[in-house]
Image 1 (cartoon, rainbow over the protein chains, first blue to last red):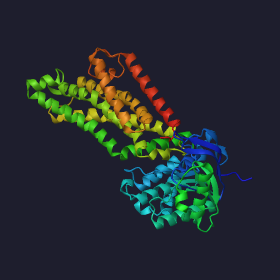
Image 2 (cartoon, rainbow over the protein chains, first blue to last red; image 1 turned 120 degrees about the vertical axis):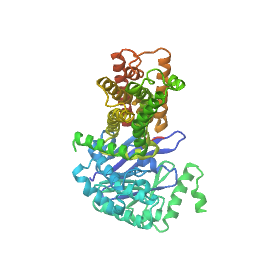
Image 3 (cartoon, rainbow over the protein chains, first blue to last red; image 1 turned 30 degrees about the vertical axis):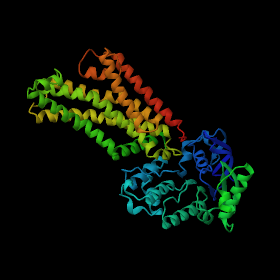
Length: 251
Length: 256
C-alpha cells in the first residue's frame, strides 16, 4: 500500500467561539494534487496549519510521509515545502539571500545552496530580482518569492494556502506548471484556493470544506463546478440547520 | 546534515537578518557613536566651568580630562545599554511575529528551538561587538578633545565600560522572553523600560551592589565593592530567561 505524503485522521482543533476544524480525515497521495475549497472561515487554513504542526490537534493524528507529526524527525521536514499566509520575505534582505535563508532552514547543506536557489528563482521567474531587497518587490513578486522558497530542493510534500494570491496571469501559469511538475515527480500537493476554475485545471482531487468539516468532494471535470460546489455547501448548511451564503448564491 | 551544521546554518541566518535590519543597525550605531558623542558633549560642557551644568552632571562626570569623559560615558551606558540592547533583542525576536515571518520557521529542518537559540547567540555577539566598539569610540572622542593617549588607569575604566555593556546584555536578555510571550516588539521593549525603572527605584531605595540588575552599573561606576553573588544572580536570571525563551518557541502554536 502506498504511504500517503500527508494524512490526517479524525483531526479536531477548535478555537474559542467554535471556529476551527472537526473530525477531519484527509490524505494526499504521491503524484496527487489535492485541492481544498471552501468559503471564508470554512477551516482550510486551520487544516493546513495543523498539517504543518503550527497548531496542535485536540484529537486525531497527523502523519507526514508516514511519520506521526508528534515524533517527527527534523530531517523529514527538509522534504516539505509550504507557504502559509506570509511568504518568507525579510524586507531588508535581497531576493537571493531570502532564498538562501529558505534553503538553509530546510537543511540544504551550504555547498548545495547555490544551485538549489538558482533553480527555484528561475522556476518562479524572479531571477532578475536576485539583488533586489524584498521590501521593494511588488505584492505579486513577494508571493512568487514565497512560492520559490516553498519549491526549494524538490519537496515531496507541498502545502500551499491560497498560492495564487496577488499573482499575475503569468505567475499563475508558472505555479500551475510547478505543481504539475511536482506531482509528476511523485510529490504530493495540498493546495487551498477560492479560484475553482484554476483548481479544476490542476487538481487530481477536490475536497470541499464547510463549517470546519470536509463535507464532500468534487470531480475536477465537473461542468459548472462552482454550482456543484455551492450545492454541496448548501446541502451541508441545510443538514446542520444553519443559514449560510450558499443559499443566496444558488437562488 | 549534522546538528553542528544545522547550528552553523541557524547562526548564519540570524546573522544575515541582524545585518540587514535597519532598526538593529540604528540601535547598534546609537549605542556606540551616540553614547561616545554624548559623553564627549558632557566633557565639553564641564570644561567650560558652568556651575549649573556641572551640578547636573554630578561630581565625577564633571572631572576634567579622561576621568570626567569616562565617568560620563559609563553613566550614560548604564541606562542606554540596557534600554538599547533590550530594544535590539525585542526587535530580533518580536519582528518575526509582527511581520508574520514566524510561519516560515515552522515545518523546517532547523527547528524553532535552534532558530531562537541562534537569535540569542547572535544577540550576545552583537553586545560583545558594542563592548569592543564603544570604548574604542570613547578613546577616539577623548583624543579629539585633546586628552592624549589614555593611561593604564583609564584602561581599567575602559575595560569596566566594556564589561558593563556585556553585563547589560544579560540584563536585557529577558526581553526576548517577553517579546516571545507577547508575540511582538512592544512587550520586550516594555520590559526593558520596566527593568530600567525598577533598577533605578531599587538603587534610590537603598539596594546596593547585591541587586542583580543594578550590580553591573554600580560596579562599573565603582560605587561599592563588587558582589559576586549579584553577578551569579544576573547570570542565572539570563540563563533562565534564555531557556524559557527557547521553551516558548519550541511549544509555539499559531493560535492567535
